[in-house]
Length: 497
Image (cartoon, rainbow, N blue to C red; front, side, top):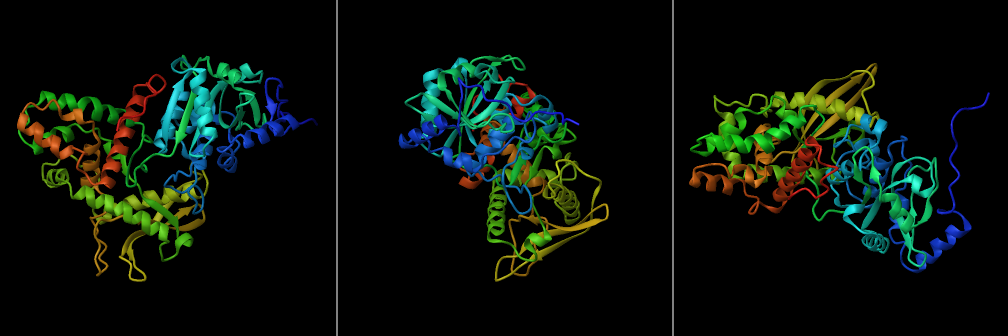
């Protein structure tokens, strides 16, 4: 019986020239001699085929992020940290992308969230000459790459909207090499840059906006090491709105007289799921991945996280937050307490998630349950003790031992692993308050108090490591606010720092 389905498409030529054809090879060699294929080698080393028919944007982005050697900061499978489509889910649920694809603006948002530097241009805000200039610039170096958003029909191909990276440029023929991530459909191919521009210069009916292109490069500073904002919980939009819109209005309407009253106003109306919005980044490993010792990389990452935590706890704002949250009248019972028992609960949840991720599953298969959680210290070869929470994760009849590596700001030679000095509510809230836009506090009427709070939340004099952490959270806040207002496809500007 005949098998249903399609096996590839014949590439319409002209206008395209197949990369592996005789003419395509000639164009390739000539472009190499002209020095306009420098970006090709890193891209081809990370070339991937989109895993779902509508994942062209995610595949293009993960390919470029890996080509730029941007560390995702979390494991993909086994011990390996590597970008994959399944990890690009902060601006649009994967199930939604699987059905509808992703818009240009939300892919730009994803690139920012993944820690890349992004410059995005719609065709109505750019020109073909500017596009050519950027393609040429990226083709003569390997530190930035172009992703094009275009309509296939302009290239006489089947389908409509598509994303793919540009892997090189032939200046003499004015042709760009498209590394098509839908390799099951069309192979890589050269196209005249003018026709590619025309393919980008049309309206995406799903957004009413023009298509375009984006330049992606490594950031000057690394993304957040210890804290991150999460939109996994459905309440994230309400929390983002509260922090960005409601808090400034509340402070403007209240007659606050000191710092404790300012913080009380902020905390009094915190949405109930606030604790799901900002997270500290935990590292999870299978016991067989690391046994009883830590790798040099694990030690280095924990040391950086611990230093960020120490710097947060050294701020003047932290002392005020700690005082308020420790008071009997604290209104923040929904935040983490920081006690060992709560750390065990956190670890149980994180170890289950870690077991799921390391198994390569995108959704839970069966029920994961974590048993026997215990807090202990690892110390070897004179190193400082490291806090580890171990748990036995059970899924059906299978058992797996997982470790959660816990950053801490203080340890001592007696190996009393500073329970309570791991990330908890005091420092998490402090970091988020520092990340709020400076204008948040401008409505405070008392001039002396306004100046005092401005000094406490200023990022200018923060240590470099903490300053970068806070600015990363601030950029995330702006991005999530744009998502909440459905502005990501209208406003492509970089998030404010």
